Image 1 (cartoon, rainbow, N blue to C red):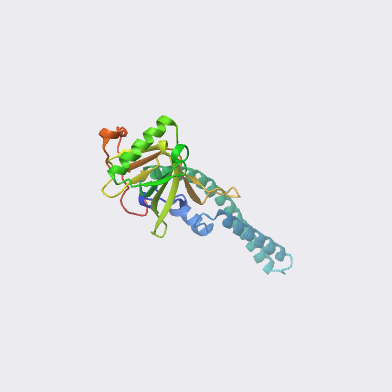
Image 2: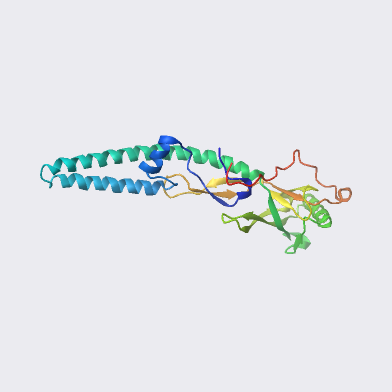
Length: 264
C-alpha cells in the first residue's frame, strides 16, 4: 500500500485513486475521463453525454435519407459509450471505496508512528489553589521536566487536574511549517524521559487515526482529516529521577521519521 512519507503528515491529506495499469488505466483516464477523485463530475458528464445521445436520436426523425442512417448510427455509438461509462464508473467507484478504507488505515499507521516537534507545553490549573494559573514548561530543560513529573504525580494522587495545551509543528502541502495544538489533562501524558535530543522535545499520538471527510453524496471521500485522540507520548529531556521517581521506560523505542520522498 503506497502512502505519504512520515514527514508529510499533516491534518488533511488527499486520498489518491487506486492504482491501475495498462488497459484499465487507459479506460479510466481517457474513456471515462477520471483522472482524480471527481466521481460526481464524471457522472454529470455521463448524463450530459446521454442527453446528447437523446438529442441525436430525436434528430434522426428529422433527417432525410441517406443521412438518417448516419445519424442513427451516431446515436447508437453514443448510447454504447454512455453504457460503458456508467458500468465502468460503477466498478471504479466500488473499488475506490474499498481502496480508500485500506489506504486510510495504512496512512493512520504512519500518523501513529510520526513524531512532531513540540513548540510549547502549557499547563493551566483547573482546581485548587492553582486554578486559572498558567505555566509554560520547557521540555528540553531537566529542571522543568523534574517539576512537571512531580506535578503529574501530585495530580494523580490528589485528583486535582490541570489542562495541558501542547503546540507542535508539521509541514503543510507547500512545505511551510505550521502549528497545531492538542489539549489533554496532565495525567493523560506519558513522558519518555531522556529520549529527546539536545534542545528538542517530540510528541507522538499512538492511537491517532485519519478519517475520510464526509460527503453529502455517497461518492468516495476525496480527503482525510486526522483525529489526534487517545494517549500522548512525549520525548523530553532527562531529569533527576532519584528525586521524582520518573516514569518507567516504554517497552520499545518510538519509531523515527522516515527519510524524504513523496511516497512509499
